[in-house]
Every structure is written in structure tokens, then in C-alpha cells.
Image (cartoon, rainbow, N blue to C red; front, side, top):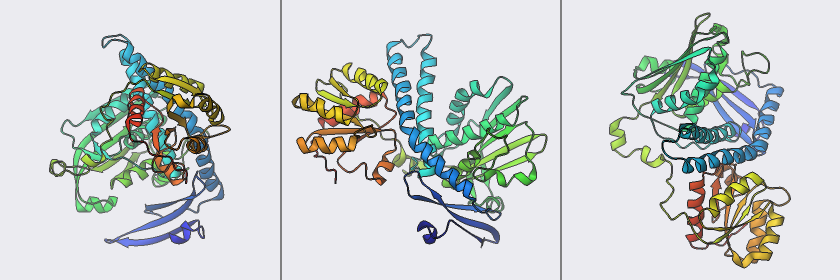
Length: 444
């Protein structure tokens, strides 16, 4: 692993034995979108194929593509989420379009999580596990996916009423379910049935050894189709990155590899059973969290998302918004002005310096995007802090905060907002920043 991390090797594979079972462990070096490298550890029943140069180039291209579009995509989700919440606040509880607006808002939130997961494929992803009810995940995803699956397919669910909880990141499990359901759809172009089931199960020592997991209590999720099935020779290869049985241009070959990676992170297992001509069933096992563990104050209390503090969300201060996307600027201005703030605008760092020079004494907070043409948010903050060391500055970005920390773009003492932005979250965080003690910005 050290040789691979330092670039001396691209891949190393070795057969090992554990509890009487032989398997292969492979360590692979893959390019990262940030210019470094990602070291991936995989376990399989067969030796991994040699990583071909075109595949390595594909990984690099995927990373560069994601790094280039994520910021713009987060801006679009900000607009979708923001305006849907504005409309939800305007219509009454019984308005005939309320349900549709709420689905748009939920879809934007899912899109934000899936964007983060997609970035994690090349950059590494910091999951946020919490106590999770898979039945709720299934219900939400089926409702969202049903319109795009197609009328030629019948989607059925069978969820156990007494289903136990598991510890997992909600966005990652939505990604797992989406990949499996869409694969099932693609296996039935002429129509058929997709069946999603959940239940509790007990894994014996013999079964546990076969799947490389610990014996004990698990939550099981299955996604079945009545499609063409999978050839036996293809069953093991399905999990390889960039391997796909779909026609040219119809699949990336990343979906199932991502599914196995996610499930493995939670000490679970995933495999497929198939009969050619009769369909396939993908089976997922995730460790069950017992009530005793919950009562003992285990990870569910540690990993629950941080709640926005109950603070006043209005004010009379002046805020300078620095954002290159006009639509996002207009939305942010509307949100803040509707809560009593005076708002000034700038389309980039250079224009922000001119606006501040003209109105500096009036501005109490600068809310700036990180990535902009001509002058980005970090350079703008450094220039403003030379003029006013105790000026309050809040950054916003479509990149995850852990990536910003790793690349040196975000340091202690900075306030940060993750795009896409929800209006209520934006208002609460702006109020919190204005009320907090001043912390001078240090670009070093």
C-alpha cells in the first residue's frame, strides 16, 4: 500500500487465506480529481484483472468532469430547492399543487446528496451514518422513481412492518437503491415486474463465512426483476468498475461497483442470484442495530445531522452577496431582503472590492461563493481582511467542506455554507454569523 500510495506501483494483488477461505485482496491506485491519488482496497473471489491504461484514463476523466460540473449543478439545485420552498410557504396546506411542490423540494435534496456521493467515487466521501429505517428509504425512492421507470413495468414493494434499523448514510442508501432499481428496469425493455422487499434475517456462521461478514442479526433488502437474467460467467464480473453488459452508450459500468463499495463500508454484503431467462435478484445485508444498542447511546446519537439552531432569522444589517450566477444571486437576495436585510450584489471578487470600497462602512457581512471568474472567494476574503481584519465573511460552495479543507481552501475561523442552499438554512446561518463574536480571517 505504501508503494502504491507513493506511485511506485499502480496495482498489487495477492491471494490470502482467512478462516479456511481463500480470496484475493487487491490494492489499486486511481487518480483523484484534486490532483492526488485514491488508494482503493478490494476483496474478491478471483484475481483482479490488470488495470488497463484506457480504464485509468477513464477514471481521471471522470474526476475532472465531476470537478468541473459540480459547482454549476449545485447552483441549479439551489434554485430548484429555494424557489420550491418559497412557493410552499406561499400556498396553503390544502393547496392542490402542494404535494407536487414538496416532491420537487425532496428531489432537489436527493440530488444534492447524490452529487456528493458521485464526487466521492473519485475524491473519497465522508459519509454521515445515522440510525436508518430502510422502509422509509424504499418508500421515498419508489415514489420518486416510479414516473421515470416507465408504464411498461410494475413496481411492487413488500416491506416488513417490524423491520429493524441499521446505521448508514441516507444518501448512500438512496444511491444503492436507485442503482439496483434502474438496472432492473434496463433488464426488461419489453416490460415486467420489479419487486423490492425488506425483512429481518439471522446470519449463521456458515453463511457469514460465505459472504465475508460476521454472523448475527441483519436487515435484508432485495431488488428482483423478471428480465433476461445474467449469464453465470458474468456474475463475478458485474462488480468490476467500467464493466457493463449494456449496449454501447447505455451504461457506465460504475453503478454496481459503487453499490458494493457502499455496502462494504457498513460491514454488509451484496450479491446476485440469477437464472437466465427468468430474471435476477440482488440481495443486500446490512447489520441490524438492536434496541439495546440504541438505549446504550450508540452511534445514532453521534451521527444524526446537526440541527440548525433556533435563532431569529431576520435582521436589519447590510449583507454583500458575491456570486457569479445571476439566478442564484437573485434568489439569495430575495431570501434575505424578505427577512429585513439590506442586500448589495457583486458578480465576482473584483466587482465586490469596488462595491465594498463604495459602501464598506455599511456592510456587516460578506457572503461569497468560493469559485468565481477573475477573482474567487478566498482571494477576495484575503484582500478585504487586509482592509478590515475583523470583517465577517461567510463562504458558500458546491464542493464538500472536507475537500476544501484538504486543498487548503477552507481553514479554521471561516464560516461555510454547503450548496445547494435552503432558504431557512441560509437565513439562520446568516443570523448566526452576524451574532457570533468576530474572528479575524487568516489566509495563512
